[in-house]
Length: 264
Image 1 (cartoon, rainbow, N blue to C red):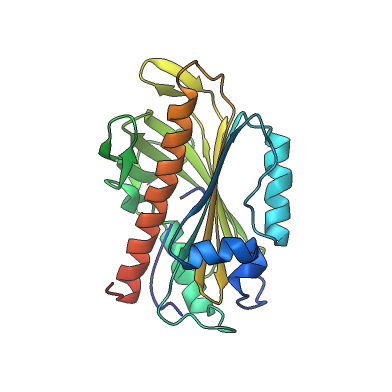
Image 2: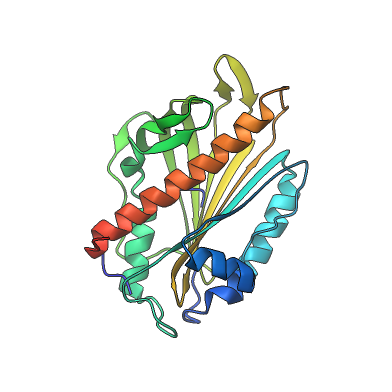
């Protein structure tokens, strides 16, 4: 299905059950939309229950984690990356899973990616800079830490400059104990919108899950935020999170295409 070296946002896990039909994870209607090249999204306020999490044990686990977090804003998105060798019953190999896992750890490649800014009506740089650092307080930038074998769980720390929220520190927690690969990005510093602090430490979690399906790779992303919404800012925040999810998927797709030698 996919040969390569490769990354990775948000955000997987694996249990060797093999690929399954996409409809098993998202239902027939959701699968139809994703196969047609559309994304499926939901954005809500003051609701802790996920509506788009996949129908898997990992999806149930995410439901519990998000409910316990009790966010004020939830933005969910589903995508399908079509792999050239995808076919019914063909599951990713260990080498292919390792390639995807290492892509998810190549945080430096997030530097310079763009998203559509609804408030400005144009494309804008998402992360001006992004680098792995030695710890939650570290400033020395390190090479992306690729591995030769996937650990069940692992943690990275990153220093990332976002043109909307400024420079902040994040923790990336990786989980490879289920059937998909999952990573969770948590903010370790207060995030501000302009001069207004809106997200305190550990009050934003972005989770990205990637799973193997007959039709390619299924990507699910959810941003959960605990913030005091300022009048007039709620819509901007939700649109920003939604468009940033699109940017992560575009980045993921381009990295995958490059690693597989796919020309579209």
